[in-house]
Image 1 (tube, each protein chain N blue to C red):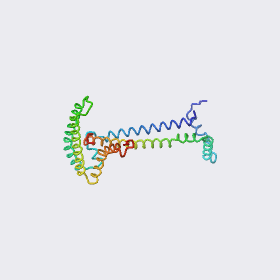
Image 2 (cartoon, helix red, strand yellow; image 1 turned 90 degrees about the vertical axis):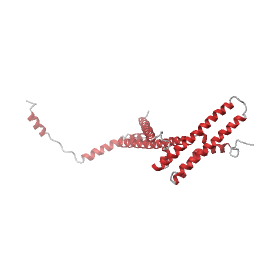
Image 3 (tube, helix red, strand yellow; image 1 turned 135 degrees about the vertical axis):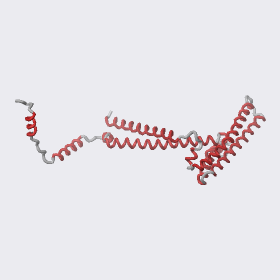
Image 4 (cartoon, rainbow over the protein chains, first blue to last red; image 1 turned 180 degrees about the vertical axis):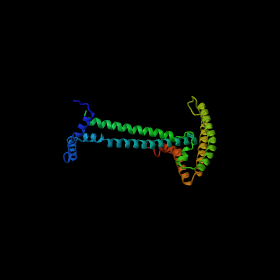
Length: 100
Length: 163
């Protein structure tokens, strides 16, 4: 028997029966997923917090928030430093220490 | 150690590093960007929202004032050197040293008087509200710090002086 016959192989593939899914298959799959998640639910607040932090959506939002707040605070601080230095430059030029 | 605790500590450390990194980078960039050490008047322009014409008027006043101020400062420095030579290793204050002190005081008074006149002239070159604010700010920065020191040392306010 020639098992390498491509024509025969093609016919065999076409003849393979694809069983129908049982009724409410998708719903049952989701129910099983939810049941597994419920079984693996964190037992303490520490576990709950850790699992919350590890969620990609939270992690990305947290990193973005920290970056933005760092940039905002750094810019404000830099402006204040620049302002103070410029003020000291002006003061040093017009008001020598002997006149203060 | 508990896995969740390690995750939390790691997240806190990472968050702190992200915040600190972005804070210091932004601060450094802002200082570099806003700094203008070559222009003494950059603070005036930004702080008192001066336009080009006002800044030009003030620059003329500023450049006229600086040589006067520098000349008096040079005189004060010279008198101070003379005073140091007169005092030397002496254990008492001679009449010559006292006269030198009086000269230095007179020069300082002249310097301060010129400075205040300059502040008034600059304030008049600004829009009225900004000029008023400038004068108050300069008074606070130059005279009031000295007044605070004098007040803190006066017997009426100091609790440590009992006569």
